Length: 158
Image (cartoon, rainbow, N blue to C red; front, side):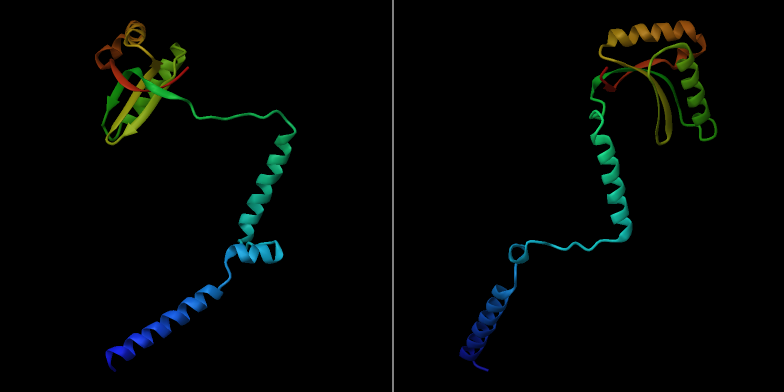
């Protein structure tokens, strides 16, 4: 097959392909022709959507309640516990949390960042606020004094 024949064949193939592509209906054409689109989805999804629609209709008659994530900013917390003992750290963290919650009205956060369990107290904007809280915790729980320290953290705004 010579070069001219190849080029001619390529032109014919490209022309036929472009013509066939141009004849395919687009989504807009399908929508404009009869005005509707059919969506096929599993029955479980239909049930969930209907349930969500039902809940939305019930709540639309009531006052609108806006739920937003807490705003966070840079601040300070008092770390009262950190340990990586596999057997005891989690229980000890929960115990310390319980002790602080019963004595103070401060938020207490237990976190696990492998391999450490940590317990942090408060959402303080300034280091001075954190130092005052740490002094109160030391006074209430002298046995924790060695493990207390102030740490910078992302805090929830009050």
